[in-house]
Image (cartoon, rainbow, N blue to C red):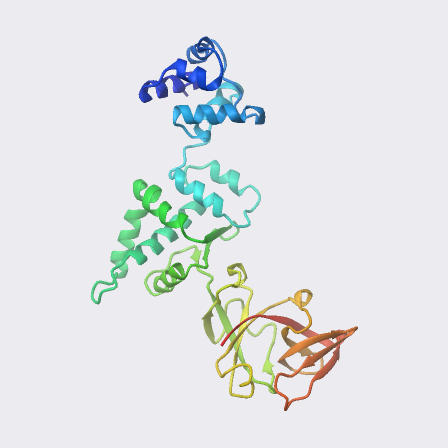
Length: 347
């Protein structure tokens, strides 16, 4: 591995600068710079906090990144071997900025590999989204599956494309991603309408192994004002229902796998919700519920769950019907099997 001094000397030569100019920038003597370049003196330990301003000056003058300079210095001073060069340096920087709830050791793992499997799947998803958005919406010009896969395979191995065009596009987009180490699964999340539209089109075009877009919520039942609906903990497994609907704007996409939805049927709630209104409910949300919230509840003596507004009264709950034709219900907290908050309503 070349020394820090040799690297700095080569950079200065390529940039047409001088050792004297560098010495003036750093506030040191030209002789000191010459000794570093020839190896007679060790470079300063630029990784220490007190040398932060020096590090910035070296980086700016040499036109090099902090990572490159620190790798050289650490190896020369402490014999710490540098990590492998990332396949996509700019993309890695962006992905680490947007990484959500990183598992312990994941960032260190990523830095220790040229291309981590998590990065690879995230880039694959981003390429698919980007290429779908670039498609011309003209009849007869839509991507076929084989053609689209070929485009994706070629694009995600094109370093110039990934590091340039793809990074530039996603820097402007609100998104986050996470990596499930147990199942080697990347989850790519965004509130961008543009990206949501792209992911919907992708579902019908191609399925990416190990990648999911948790943007839909299962509809598990119909509900009306006076009639409850069947609710059993084992009725549906995670993500299942008789229908799937998009998670509404403004709801944290990380909740998508936890939420379920019920659909209003009939006009018994017409003063509040029309037929087909969707209520998105968060399981195990008792602690979040406040007076006036709309809730799903189920007591120990009733086999069905109901939608009501809630008020707390000591150890009791007043569950108010939204239709005046039906009576309010007063229950002790201890008599409830289920109390869950309606997080969002889509009319």
